[in-house]
Amino acid sequence: MDPVFTIPYTELRSMEILDEMIKKVAKGVAKEKGEKVGSLKDVCSSHIPVSRQQKGFDFIVVREEFLENPRIFKTVQVKGSRAYYSDGKKSDKFKYTLSFGRFKVPDNADYFIFIGLFPDYYHGVRVDKAEWRPVTLLLTNSELTELFSRLKTKKGTEETRFYTSFNSPDELYLTRGSENPEGESISHFLISKERVQLLFF
Image 1 (tube, rainbow, N blue to C red):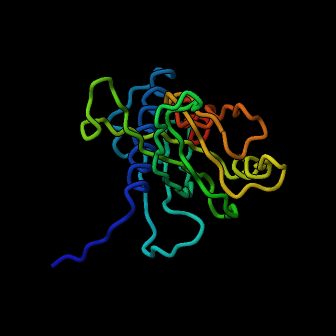
Image 2 (cartoon, rainbow, N blue to C red):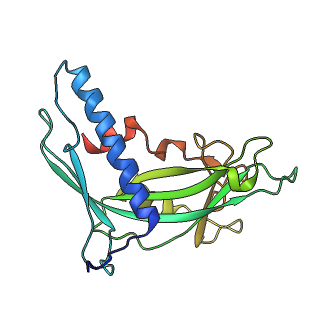
């Protein structure tokens, strides 16, 4: 009988999203350089610690040597949140909100993924038939440290949590924790081909 080893779904989904994005970028990079490459299935891989008590990071991404790009290793920590859905009040500016706690940024994590799954409702679709989609932020250690340093309450004291709110998964706003009562855009942290190319190539 084989033993069962489990990991949180948010970590698994984060690895899948990052793996898929790195392969898309690799294909695009090769095309830009006019290079013909074979299968890209081995261009990257993710590795999880044996111990669930590993401090600082949840998995390691290895992007193998690719064209003139040397092999790199990056440690990643994942934070997940449920999506809070607005009840439709006129005062609610955003339909969805993700909630994350502030924490001490570990030195041994290169990147941080904040991921939430939200039900993408369509008119006339029942709740149990809604499509669940991920919204994913990818930040470097220094970017997260800077973001945490300016999280403030309405009274100007240090904030212990932060909210990211949105109507569309392409436009995210920092609401709780932002000194701007309207919220501030953090869409530039959304995982994308451009961001992955910058951080992994």
